[in-house]
Image (cartoon, rainbow, N blue to C red; front, side, top):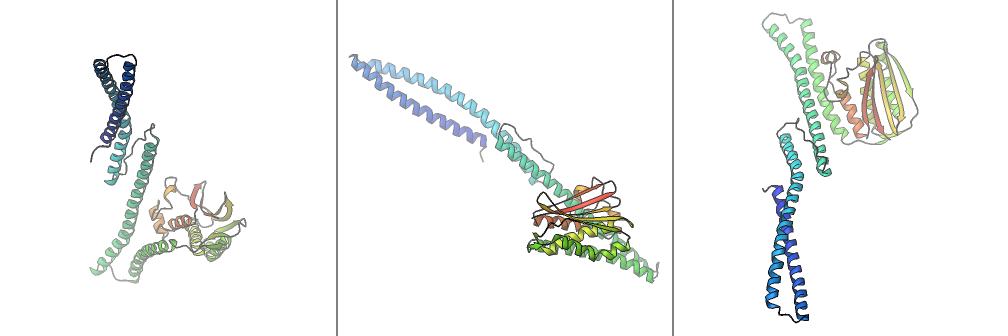
Length: 353
């Protein structure tokens, strides 16, 4: 395929040639007519003078056309290079992205607004792809780690029992059962996530009382909060019904309360809040405890992402609860967010009303 630069330059040369030809024909005919009329008016022989006039006119037009064409081509070449250079850079970056190099970036030219907008969009796409690739790698690593640990333990215990190193006692069976249940929890989490994706694609919207959902989910977990000695406070502001899917919202609210239950130490506090902010319905849960490191906050809503993996594993989490909350917010036109400072962590979901 021919270069865009040469195509544009060829079109420019054609336009210049057509303009020169039309101008030459027009001026030639007009000047010839005027010259002939003058010669006839003054009764002057026109044959010799007409030839000289035509030759002089043709020479002048040729010189003028060559100069104009050269200047036009020079300016066109400068302009077209200014246009095609950033396009080549964008094309090169797109090729690198197609090859899997998500670190590629292109400098957006300031002189051409359309190309600058294209370059900026491509840079943002590359940034998103790079983030997705990193999260994909983390997901694979997390799932592989979750599978490897219990499988290694199971293999070690079973080989020890087979070789007679360890007796098949009730204690050994309990340990084997714990490792099997860890695998079961991981498979259940994957199944729950796939089922949620199918359900979230078809939300059943209707009037929903978010406060009632929050109170119902809190009642379901009241015994667990009491068992840990956690004091639960509510801050409800009577926002009225919102449009949403009752099942999805119940799952999101329940996941936030489960998250607070897991990470609040015995004797801690949890505050559940429902309010309306900036035209959005907002449900937030604040709990005391260790908090979330700043480097982990931007990623806690990603699937299977867990900053403190050993701590999360001990608590039995699989890293999908907050990911589901994020998806529920998305299908309801809202967003999620989190803050963690001063020994308190707040995680919230907003819904379009």
